[in-house]
Length: 174
Ligand SMILES: NC(=O)N[C@H]1NC(=O)NC1=O
Image: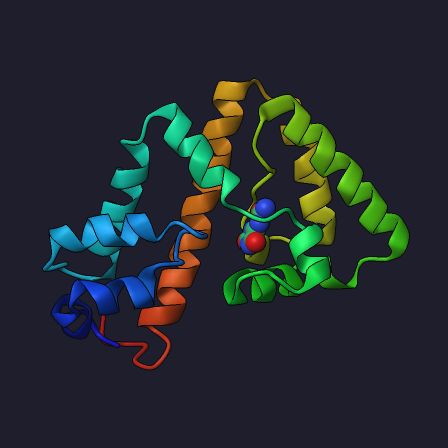
């Protein structure tokens, strides 16, 4: 798909295509459709990023709360979105030992108790050891710093999902 194809999508098709670039937040795609035509993929990405930045803190936390836990209930039940399933599998979350799973559950629960939203990290840019290290380190942040850190990870996830959709069949068009 090239950018002129993206720009030609009606909002129903646009939301069908880009509705999960921010996990379970199709409202964001529905909102940024208003900014067509996009000059290129970075322009679309910048509008998504601005939309998120302009949310009140409760909205940013809402975006974070739409993310599934890493190695959590949805992974175990097979109810992750297609994108999350691929990302978590690639980062080794689907093949943890029972001890590692217990440790992840414990750390995730501690993090949630502290911040009131789940630990979010761009799994594709990390691995099992990196995720555990970040989970430990970021748990020591204060709320303001951690919210910002987590939202940055949402943007990284979004960037990779967008690139996967738009560049998958025409790598040189944008
Ligand atoms: N909680 C969390 O980070 N979830 C995720 N991260 C990612 O890259 N895919 C996810 O499902």
